[in-house]
Length: 162
Image (tube, rainbow, N blue to C red):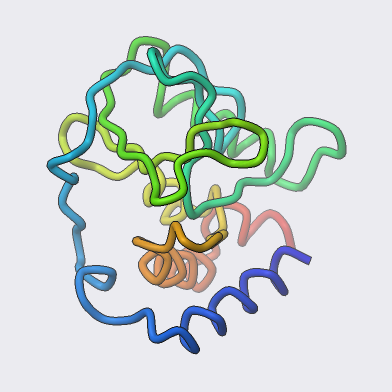
């Protein structure tokens, strides 16, 4: 189901003409408008609690579930997020064009202080797949490209969940 959704999103992005520009840049710079904060805790692979902001969903990615019906590689994705973002980790975040989801979570692009993009790292290592929900499409094509590379290299869930 997720694979079909991802393919539909790719087709919609192509139809909408979302291409080129810095979406394809090798290393996106940390946005200058990003706010500084600290991680309070990691909920799962794509949801964290940020001090002063609350429960926050990483934009553009989807990790396998660990709550309810556990999905293949869910525990590993969650454990990786916890390794990357232990309590107190200094981060920078930027809210998406749509800043909250239907559950009230903040929708964020998350960066380490050194500029590394957490959302991107999760996809690149094979712990997440792209999930694009317009209007939050800024890094959509980049996430799709990184997921293709992870899949070709059989990294993470691409090796474990066949």
